[in-house]
Image (cartoon, helix red, strand yellow):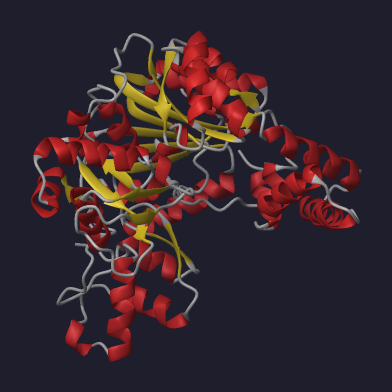
Length: 477
């Protein structure tokens, strides 16, 4: 098939860390599930685009099988070209309508649907959840992302204004240019901004801080259907699925809600996790969800027990606020992570654990390594590791990905990084994140590090750059 809007205006694919099967397996494990090991699993992605999310998974998990489907012929062709260049044999991209996925495709341990549900007509939304149920293995996990109410209402309002302004313009990029011009007018037009216009301006900044092609597909697409969290869960339940958790574990904790509000939520929702999350969305004016689902018959453990983290791995993107934090007992230090996460602690084991992870990043450390390096008893380390995960400072994993943090004797950049560096600035790291190499030397070196050059033969500047590439997760073990 060809001739879709995605063929006319390509939507480049990127890795989404929250969709990685290891992320899904780790969260499922915390809630008592026994999923397929990510080293030997089957993964299906609906609306896979050019494989920007799926191909890196296939590279780092060679013992697993990956299948993607998308309606855009151009995107599928580009993805197949990348797969052929990398010589991958464990991934297939198919051109077609996601609704055609049936029993002949077999069962999958992890099913991913990112950026489709809110932008598809009702029959396709229904097909997404039908496939996520029918094609999901007994202990499998399905991931679906979608625009959420009430926060997405502001974006929906701006979309309606942009559609009005674009009028009868047919050329997609011209429509997007006119839409952006209107957003600029709205953001700058009011002489005396009030609280409402400030909220709108904040949303406009998010929308305009992207390429025009994203505006074409996200805000100006034919369909834009945000839903309340409880509505999505009810839809999933109609297909025999139940709410498992959020793919961003920290994002669904109560850290952003006051203690008084948490107490009220406890009275309203008691043990109803779905109801509690819906009210939390009201309080936070949530605009987007990354929801994990499993079959309705799977027994889940809640709340999470700290003992579940034993045998797992952890990694961090956090940093200490102080340049040289004091690890002594009673001296409070602050650590900041992504998504506005943070923690202050004077506990010596907690500080030692976080510093050990920071020093090893982006490489993960096993629970046993953390027990050794943090210097605490196993029970304390387990409690602290779970607490830092819920605070958004650490990510828990079930395996260790094949990256290195130091430049080896014969440094090797991942095959995907070498391929991408030869074609542009955006690369995918081995821990499934986007890395932008804006400097020519960075890209040239990434292309040339295929194991044929000795570290000693690199110039001093190249050795420094190679070290940076290692810290970005671009060098393979």
